[in-house]
Every structure is written in C-alpha cells, then in structure tokens.
Length: 60
Image (cartoon, rainbow, N blue to C red):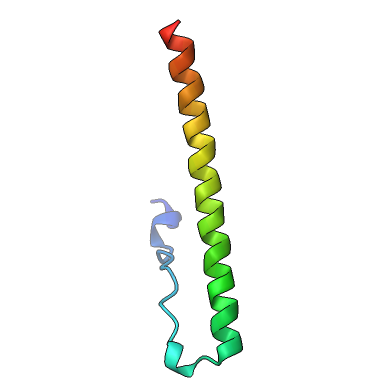
C-alpha cells in the first residue's frame, strides 16, 4: 500500500471576502492577480514561440 494515497489533496485557497478587505488590501490583491496574469501571458508567449519554431523546422 502506498501511503502517498492517504495524504489529503491540496485544495486551492478560496476567494477572499472583499467586503472585509481594506482599499489597500484590495489594491495589493489586484497587484497579485496582475502579476499572475503577466506570468501566464509570458508562459503563453514562450509556448507560442516554441510552437512556431517547431512548425518552421518541420515545414522545411
């Protein structure tokens, strides 16, 4: 028996209650979200560059 199967599954954190957050906390929350969006866009760009390079290589 593998004991790793018994570990609880990590669940993503729930959405924060924005009614309880101050303006500063909301601005910090937005900044964190924007940073994550930027990271996702960079990952998309890298994957598109890789795909374009592969397509160009195999079309030759």
